[in-house]
Length: 168
Image 1 (cartoon, rainbow, N blue to C red):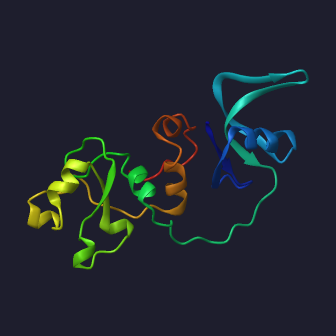
Image 2: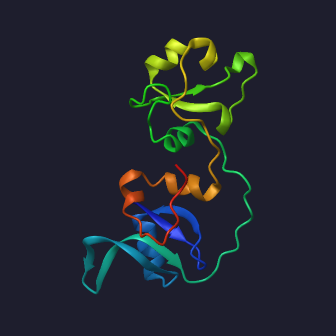
Image 3: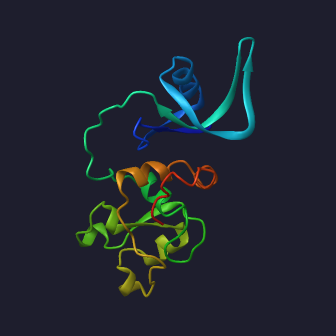
């Protein structure tokens, strides 16, 4: 189902929710639609509502400060947009730049998305040892960038210009 971006009352990204949850928040007057899918509407007997893409909470929600985005395999694939860091083809696995057997950690700066062929070819070596240079260096996304990246490319491109775009 479509994900809807939830903004705090101060317009900072908080999370993504399902379309059903977004509609419930709107109907309970806890949120307002900031950006809708063009041409799509939800209709019922007493309801005519644009299908929300971005909603904003009416009241400010205090969120504990999160200094770092939590690392995950899915997060690495999303960060790298499912593109192999070695050849640029579709990535299905995560590769450790410095292999775990050589002391490499599960971290944003040590993992990249990789296709299965290149992951197998690189094996238990560093990119230099394998002669496979990285097309782009891994980076650690901010918590807000990591959350925005989970929306997917088409939803991310359709967001309004005033919403900050994550780092590439």
